[in-house]
Length: 68
Image (cartoon, rainbow, N blue to C red; front, side, top):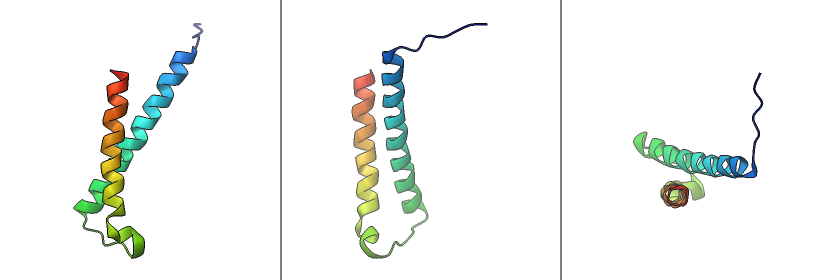
């Protein structure tokens, strides 16, 4: 039986990885909407989803740069 000791750094890295996952999900959703050419009604149709996806790219690369 082995016991692992989780340090604050492990928890910090896990939270950074979770933020990267959210950013990647933002990108995937943006690409999926563009691929399927979904027309969204109202304020979503004005490019908000694509702006959301671009922000996901920026967030992903900034966080990746911090980790490296």
